[in-house]
Image (cartoon, rainbow, N blue to C red):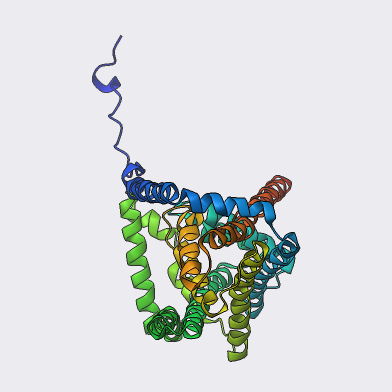
Length: 367
């Protein structure tokens, strides 16, 4: 019997927000991946003879250069981990190098494995892990932000130096300009945070952008705004101080990060029996590294190989040797880093799960 009169149930209220479908959000990424895949496939078919010669080079690798290449890549990752560790120390957070290095490898694996959203997912993952290790939100955000800005700045310096050594003045100017563009927003933000009115303006802007993001996902404004306590966070961030010596120390470690990674490329060239084009090496390396910043494929797969191999050929290397050297370099600096990173990520996941089970009354609070 159907209910009648007062017994009829009230109609259910419509939900206040709906999760995004995700189809429109990822359609551009899918199109980009397809375009890149078609381009890479076409180039592979067109240059199959070069690829065949490059693969044949693997049968005659000079294995004596592989261990130095591995050590150079390990030095690169270690320098980046030390840079973040120093930034945490400036904020009064004592972080063990092994812990920082573990998060560095795991976050890199996340970044290199995902198309489009890889870098953003990597930052979120690193933030969560550092918070689990005991760092507060201000110190963690400061460390991740400064790391990104300093790394971008020093990559611009590498590009400028590479362009100068190759005699390309135009590219040198572009490299220096990119370095300046990377550092100006940071300086402006640091100055703004020292002034209460400017800090309030930054907070209002941040909340406006945050609210816009929430409305895209159709989330209630009040609940969404409460999830991001901007003002307390900016107040904490404004208390952070770092000396000029610390900035120089961090910059030197970032340069060591890029330089050691470039040295890995040098050893990869030597391992394939090629001649290192010293006059154009840094410029070619910067071009290949810049190609990885295009998030069309995970870690720039296909894009980096083509860009770096082409840059090495322009610098004077023989085509098959250039491609073979790039493949060896990417196996060490990309695929091996991903493999190590995911092993560490699995270990961190297991450790975090055991900790949460052992301490059920102390859940992790990301805020």
